[in-house]
Length: 143
Image 1 (cartoon, rainbow, N blue to C red):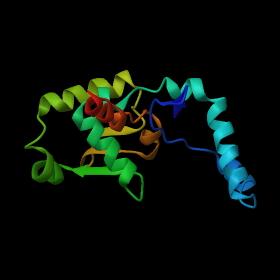
Image 2 (image 1 turned 180 degrees about the vertical axis):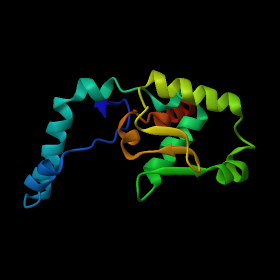
Image 3 (image 1 turned 180 degrees about the horizontal axis):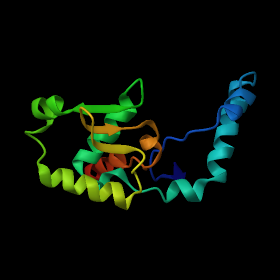
């Protein structure tokens, strides 16, 4: 997203299938313009999304996992936690994640200790944040 020709973030939006179906036979330029128009209509909403760079590293990792996954989900079993995450994150990080789930109203998008899973991240998590991390890094490089 840009404001006054300056990048302010990267967002992922989710449109209803009827919107997508209405654009299937359109010229690619028309499709691009339609998406720009839709995003512009909700620009204020999107520009107010929380910045993922301000979130905990654990939430960022779950967000990235969901975003990169073909199923747009993150499944971390207790065994996965022990093998891949326990060295990086502590119970304090889990507590911080619980606070962020409440703060950002993510109760339906991140589940903790559900069945065999320590953490489950669901698909629409990727639409809840402005991924400004590359912008933050670029600003740091400019200095």
